[in-house]
Length: 517
Image 1 (cartoon, rainbow, N blue to C red):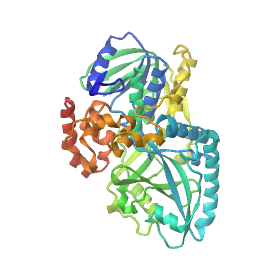
Image 2 (image 1 turned 120 degrees about the horizontal axis):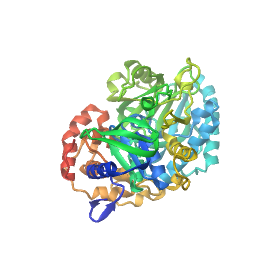
Image 3 (image 1 turned 30 degrees about the vertical axis):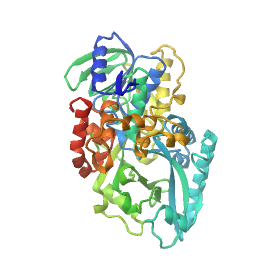
Image 4 (image 1 turned 90 degrees about the vertical axis):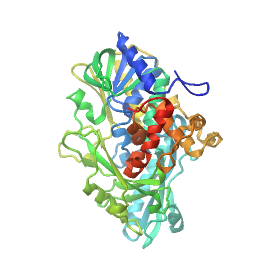
């Protein structure tokens, strides 16, 4: 639909021109098969599953792709070790299976194995380490059961003091007895995964329409409003699927969720000795909760996460509290030679998990299940709720399967998303063959040479290139400067980076031949 580099066609490209065209067509359409409301990872996954089965699919999102919870995660694709600890074997197995697909088939370019180092100190931690080590072993059994090879995720094991300090130079050395090292999957960025899934859906013909809100919805259609023009569209659909996460109750008051806030800190990686592993520190008084350091883009490391009830109105953008910031600093500081202080925190972010509520009002949110469910409202809207980032594909498959089972949709071929690589996917062992700078390969995979061929221009902060910014506008659906900085590059996490990057982001729209909204 859009030609970006030379004569290379990009049927999966999302941009302002495609949005206008597809909105116009939607106004003339008598009916679509599937209307998805919500542009996070669950909504994008539903759009891909439906479109790849041949259904005419439209997704609407009132803000931008990954505007909500899907950009505030720990950026992990994890194997469900915590669920094993609480006896949720089925959820743990599902999580390990979906991690396997992301690491090996769906998105090798956006994922990588991440070492998790849990330092052990005498006398108390060594005995605790035996219990945690047993959990690591159970997780490794699951890894093998779902077929993830040693070349992708290695088996866990104990390491000595020297190796611990090599991997995590900032750890406290007093009474250090070594560490346990486990392995899990990490995303380069969660918002990038959402965009990749959405673009893959677009390649199968789905319409991904941001800045379009659902004013009202039933199982037979929805009243939509283009928030840019004010135009209202009455769209008929065979199936309407609510994928709005913690906001699901807005469309279906019968959905009962108990949001939990997970907060992360942003610090300079250099402050942790340049470590490229996840330092894992137990939360005092808990057997299953940890604080992690998570190496990230732009020379930064995230530290998280909290798990506290988030009662009251649901904000569009949650914020960390000072108590949560202090808790994270205290826990991770116990494992550092030079503890972090409040002045080391250059940014924070917080997200709300859409946890299905328990029948017992007094339950802690940390004990609520991460299972997902498909619920039907009185007027026929299907809501896909609960779950987590790692299992988005299975959630989407189950949602479309349920629509077919209820005869809302005609019988179609089964889901094939287990074998559909996302845009840019390339075999992990061959990523080095891609003729482009390594930072672009990590962000765009096989598409990196085309991004690199775009015209040069002013750079943003932290070495983010003009080509990356223009790619975000021309191919990844960014309509505003905030879309570029907050979700396509994540520079907006640190205010000084945002300020330094404003001119370069604005210039990217000019080079792409469009005006930023």
